[in-house]
Length: 145
Image 1 (spheres, rainbow, N blue to C red):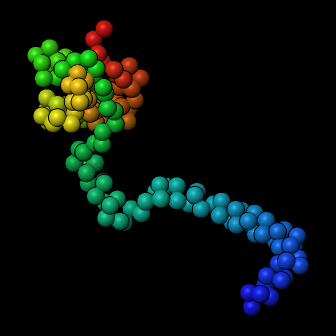
Image 2 (cartoon, helix red, strand yellow):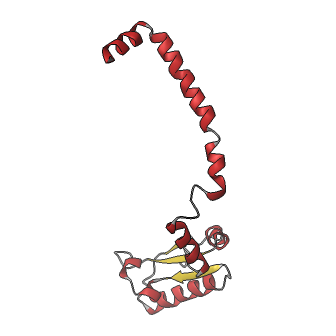
Image 3 (tube, rainbow, N blue to C red):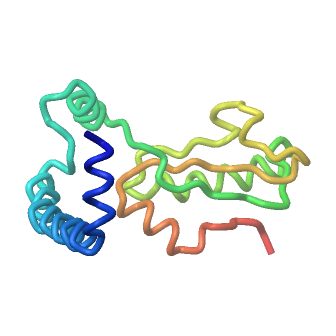
C-alpha cells in the first residue's frame, strides 16, 4: 500500500505539491476564525478550577508582582540603606493603585540582596496602571546620585 502511494507521489510530484499547497491554504482560511471565537475568554475556560481560583485571588486582593525595582550602590542592612529603602517604599505605597511593596526590610529574605551586598530589589504589586507609572517614572534604578 505505501509502495503504491510512493510511486503515485513520485510519478505526479507536481500535482502532489499543488494539492498540498491548496490544502494548506484551505486549512488557513478555515482556521483563521478560531482565534476570534476564543478572544472573549482569552482561551481560558471560565468554568475551570484555575480560572475560578484566579478570580477568587483577585477578589481577595492578591496582585501579581508587576515591577521589580533595583536599588543600586546601597547596603540595605546599613542604617543609610534602611532609610533609603523605607523612603522609596513609602513613596510607592502612597500610590492608590499599588497593592503592596515587598523588600528585604519586609521579608528579611537574603534573596533580595545582591551577592556583593550593595544592591537590593523592591517587588511592586498592583494594577497595571501603577506598574506602568513606576516603569515610566524612571524607577528602573533608584540609586542616589
